[in-house]
Length: 70
Image 1 (cartoon, rainbow, N blue to C red):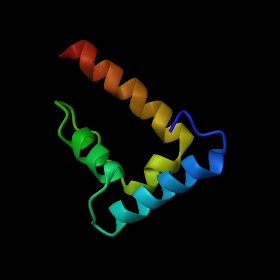
Image 2 (image 1 turned 90 degrees about the vertical axis):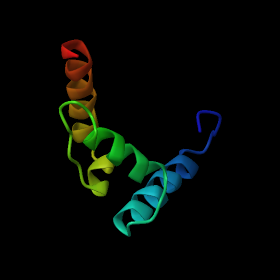
Image 3 (image 1 turned 60 degrees about the vertical axis):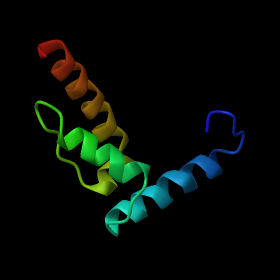
Protein backbone atom coordinates (compact mmCIF):
# COMPACT_ATOMS: atom_id res chain seq x y z
CA UNK A 1 0.00 0.00 0.00
CA UNK A 2 2.98 2.29 0.40
CA UNK A 3 3.25 2.72 -3.36
CA UNK A 4 -0.18 4.30 -3.72
CA UNK A 5 -0.16 8.04 -4.28
CA UNK A 6 -3.87 8.41 -3.58
CA UNK A 7 -4.49 7.91 0.16
CA UNK A 8 -8.17 7.26 -0.53
CA UNK A 9 -7.24 3.82 -1.87
CA UNK A 10 -5.50 2.92 1.39
CA UNK A 11 -8.29 4.35 3.55
CA UNK A 12 -10.88 2.45 1.53
CA UNK A 13 -8.95 -0.82 1.93
CA UNK A 14 -8.71 -0.27 5.69
CA UNK A 15 -12.41 0.52 6.01
CA UNK A 16 -13.36 -2.51 3.90
CA UNK A 17 -11.24 -4.85 6.00
CA UNK A 18 -12.67 -3.42 9.23
CA UNK A 19 -16.21 -3.88 7.86
CA UNK A 20 -15.43 -7.50 7.01
CA UNK A 21 -14.14 -8.08 10.55
CA UNK A 22 -17.31 -6.53 12.01
CA UNK A 23 -19.34 -9.00 9.95
CA UNK A 24 -17.23 -11.91 11.20
CA UNK A 25 -15.72 -12.46 7.78
CA UNK A 26 -12.06 -13.15 7.14
CA UNK A 27 -9.63 -10.40 6.25
CA UNK A 28 -6.40 -8.89 7.43
CA UNK A 29 -8.05 -6.66 10.05
CA UNK A 30 -9.68 -9.69 11.64
CA UNK A 31 -6.38 -11.55 11.51
CA UNK A 32 -4.71 -8.66 13.30
CA UNK A 33 -7.36 -8.71 16.04
CA UNK A 34 -6.80 -12.45 16.51
CA UNK A 35 -3.04 -11.98 16.81
CA UNK A 36 -3.49 -9.21 19.38
CA UNK A 37 -5.85 -11.40 21.41
CA UNK A 38 -3.31 -14.26 21.46
CA UNK A 39 -0.38 -12.25 22.79
CA UNK A 40 1.04 -13.33 26.20
CA UNK A 41 -0.86 -10.35 27.59
CA UNK A 42 -3.93 -10.21 25.33
CA UNK A 43 -4.93 -6.93 23.75
CA UNK A 44 -8.66 -7.06 23.13
CA UNK A 45 -9.97 -4.70 20.49
CA UNK A 46 -13.10 -4.24 18.43
CA UNK A 47 -12.72 -3.90 14.66
CA UNK A 48 -13.58 -0.18 14.74
CA UNK A 49 -10.71 0.38 17.19
CA UNK A 50 -8.36 -0.12 14.24
CA UNK A 51 -9.64 3.18 12.83
CA UNK A 52 -8.64 5.22 15.88
CA UNK A 53 -5.14 6.71 15.75
CA UNK A 54 -4.93 7.08 19.53
CA UNK A 55 -5.85 3.42 20.00
CA UNK A 56 -3.28 2.28 17.44
CA UNK A 57 -0.58 4.37 19.11
CA UNK A 58 -1.43 2.78 22.47
CA UNK A 59 -1.47 -0.71 20.97
CA UNK A 60 2.03 -0.11 19.57
CA UNK A 61 3.24 0.85 23.06
CA UNK A 62 1.49 -2.15 24.60
CA UNK A 63 3.02 -4.57 22.09
CA UNK A 64 6.48 -3.11 22.72
CA UNK A 65 6.00 -3.58 26.47
CA UNK A 66 4.85 -7.17 25.98
CA UNK A 67 7.87 -7.97 23.80
CA UNK A 68 10.27 -6.47 26.35
CA UNK A 69 8.68 -8.50 29.19
CA UNK A 70 8.72 -11.77 27.27
